[in-house]
Image 1: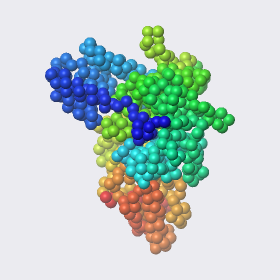
Image 2: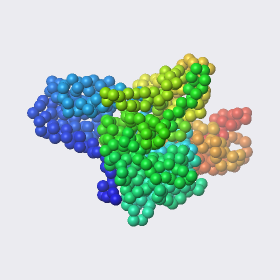
Image 3: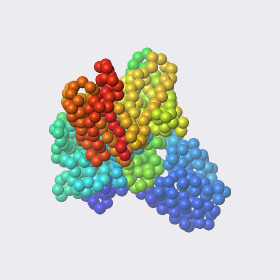
Image 4: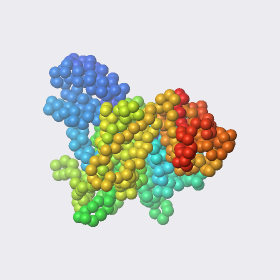
Length: 635
């Protein structure tokens, strides 16, 4: 049985320590390199690297290289790694070439591996953009393993944040169209031991977890829990797949096959990836995923993904489909520690795979990267990384377009890797109809705003998100797959969240689309005429929840902001009655926001009745404008 003292807080044996590589460098510098010029700069560079200040580390190592007259290959090696850390591929490749030209052979295998990854990353993604998830979802400790419930209503993840239950627990946040709500603990799954979310059944009613729910068992097992419409049940041990060793990271694909991580006997290394088939409702004896996937080191966090897309081939729509296993490994060649990999399935069995491909930048980093989870019917990916060098994993989201056709990797006669298209009938350069949006983002005074703009649409019925960041003058340009309409969301700190529906153009010409967003400054008033209530009541209609959720997300992103919610009516009816109705409606909005975990101390409400009209109430249209909710910044 695995010794629990050798298990880290995530329920897994520790990965190959990246600090060891750093230690070796420090020892080298403190020894032989002190006799070389530039050693002092290099030592400073090591310190900045250790803190995650990669730009500062690059400056120090460049100074070290200049002081040494370019004569120390180790500086070139580290400048290559550091430029990978800041995702500067051109300069990373330059420093790799300089290292190889030096004739030093200490790190040749690593450098060749880096070059292979960087030169072939387009074999996996046509495009990919990654961003950190909102800071309010995270904590000062590790937060990782984000997975969207299949129906898209909630985001679940694992966290070591403080709670009434010690160690790691499972949390969830409501998913809105424009973002996520405040995280809450899944109390049904919380214990004083370790728990972690794995995956869900296709209907979202069964969850597959890691935990220590059985008394007297300390190794950690896979469990299931079902939802009855109100709460999750007590987790039940999935004895058919568990062993006396650690079994974790369950990923269930289409309710038919489970991939998971285990340190059980019969593997190839520390932890391996295994799978179990579900036959006639019963999980079968687990099988090792094989030596193409597993190494003498550790493999973890598997996810089987079906990559598919409708393509037009010779005037006929054909469905491209490719199955691939995504997983983390510190045994296959990567940038450092755990990297994420893709291995294309080569049937008929589920232990037959092509060579794994490193996902490259920006998904992988020079530190640990794990947990690849693709949302259902979407190009939205969640993954986890400690790239910030804070010794804590954090959650990231990526919007990716897979290269279609994908490539399976095989080993040639000379040992080189050969990239072969998965299906030859599909043309990699197949033209896809697209829309180009371009324009400028400003505030109400016309000042440029630097922010992310997210475009969401449904080409071929699947959610496709892409994000673009405006330049210092507020300009942007983005090309997206054709869909009608697109939903645009802009949510920078210090501004009210902005959403907009954009119809598709009638031709293929670029669309000029400018945006104006409103800053959250003291006494700024935001008018909402579209928050609807039941007739003559203070009950908020469900179609208004999306608008109120935008206010929720704005307040979560700006925790220092407090608001006054005010209700207003038109002049029809008794003035005293209108006054009371406006107060009740303002309070109903506050209660809704508090129900979404916004602190009541940050909210005030007032009713103004018909005393502050926007116009003369002379027409039904004018009266409709006067029936409104206003939000004013008061702090």
